[in-house]
Length: 140
Image 1: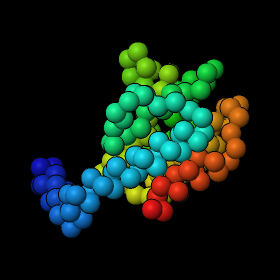
Image 2: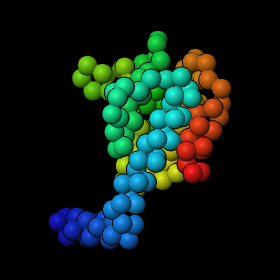
Image 3: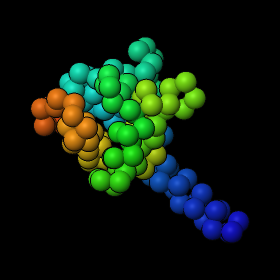
């Protein structure tokens, strides 16, 4: 109902005020950098190559692996919500968000899940490599 939407909006605004907008933006930027560092450590590409978003990271699926299968496995096997590519990028990328109510352990969990899904789909992965790269950023 409209009342619950207003109550929810009020709660979100209070959270933003409590954290402070500069801190919210800094948190999103740090989570994005950590995610991108993890993806680079796993040898995967980013989309776009330049000027990536701090709202989400679009990751190129490894050759021979469907990006849709990656995000579906993340959700179904590990309860991690992501998204696939759209339009011309469907099957070529998958996306992980780090905007809003996201924190350090959301990134660590997502990266760990990506490592497990990729390994399960036959892609060579050294467990912990992406997680360690993210941790290096998140500890600063």
